[in-house]
Every structure is written in C-alpha cells, then in structure tokens.
Length: 88
Image 1 (cartoon, rainbow, N blue to C red):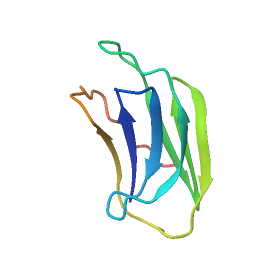
Image 2: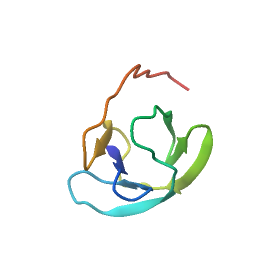
Image 3: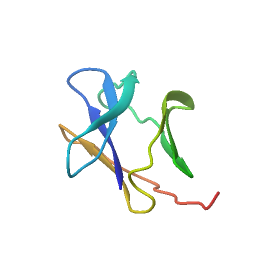
Image 4: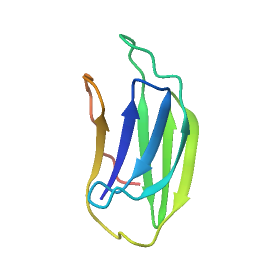
C-alpha cells in the first residue's frame, strides 16, 4: 500500500512506501498545530494523487503496487476523524 506522512515539525508532506521507506514524491503543505485540515488520497490505476485542503500537493505514477492499503502517519500526535473510502 501507500502512506501519507505528515511532519508537524516542518510544513512538509510526502508520499512513501511504509515498508521500504522509498520516497515517491510530495511537497510543502501548511500544517498548523491545533487546526483541522482535510487530506485526500485518490487512487486510479497506477496514479496516486495527494490533496491537502483541496489543493493538489503531488501526483505520481507507480506500477509497483496494484492493490493494498492506504495509510496516514505523523511524527507527532494527530487526531483523525471521518475516514471515508469511496470507489471511483
């Protein structure tokens, strides 16, 4: 699967494999403490898009995984609410 990692010490988000820690892409996003924000992962074929508050952070093409899980992680405490999975 794929994982979005949010670093609250620096305003950086990136997409990586959880097992090999391979960096696939990412970009800067304004992550502020004690504020809610929306994260969206869109999987379509071999394309993965990552959006932060509706803004496209990165779009990658990767053929290594054809199925699996999507996850979110952080280097500090985060609260997660309203996880929704929808078929495309």
